[in-house]
Length: 329
Ligand code: NAP
Ligand code: GDP
Image (cartoon, rainbow, N blue to C red; front, side, top):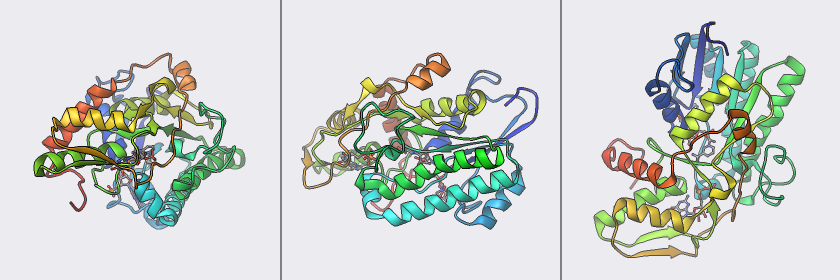
């Protein structure tokens, strides 16, 4: 990506947590700065109502409408542990269809670059830690989300094949668990942070116990959506290789689910009863990922401290409760 040629950046999944994070950063960082908009750039944030990317014809129409030079492909069927356990085939099929349509259309239309979004779920369940970019295909993923994981893994295979057969400049990003404003706060389908923010809010409002699923012992790395947005913008402009990059805080920054729940209790100012439902699944115990490659390439990055990012996310939820994605309460 240059500073002079006109660039049209199409962000698929533009209405989601990560898409809204990128839109916020690109519009609020100073113009011309490392993460701000450049004068030669037009950014388009697409939603599923504009084009259902499972459909090849709608995908082609979206590309023909905007003629993107660059694509950040975020659109996906997304969900937390419990949704992944329930809809394995739908996660596999919808994501395979979306990814295949976006990559194939981008190849046909000679799009200059595509970054697709994977997840640390793609990594093998049993492999030496920390996870790094070389370990994606070294064994089967965790059984709880194998549908989603295989669909996302396949993108890495597709990227290599498109490069070798057609010379396409396709690559991928691998974020850890993401949270922030505009998250999906559905009680059953969401990821742990937005689900627990919503549950804690309801427990406070209704004077009922705050129940956290599982033992609270599993460990996760969490990245704030506004930090992740900056890393995507960096990768779009400054990284040109097919191999993925893990976009994450350090592997020494794992947080237990109990620590997450404690931080939410504090941020929501909840004073009632709080318990763990150990009959529910814990999922993968941990999946620590290394951000060594990212930091070496970027020359360092300052992540927002977890408590500060969590407090901002809780505030966003409380301020926007009526318009937030809260599902069927
Ligand atoms: P999200 O908030 O659920 O947003 C999903 C986005 O995908 C929405 O904009 C949605 O559009 C769009 N979408 C869904 N189905 C579509 C379809 N059939 N056609 C077109 N667009 C469709 O998800 P997110 O958390 O921002 O996730 C963004 C990316 O990050 C995904 O690729 C996900 O796998 C990855 N990721 C997320 C996490 C996490 O913790 N959230 C962690 C690692 C990786 P509408 O709203 O218009 O329906
Ligand atoms: P994962 O990282 O892909 O497993 O996704 P999640 O963001 O769904 O995190 C799952 C972890 O949080 C598991 O250990 C769950 O037992 C735990 N957890 C506790 N309460 C909840 C909840 O209400 N929703 C979800 N999704 N996970 C929860």
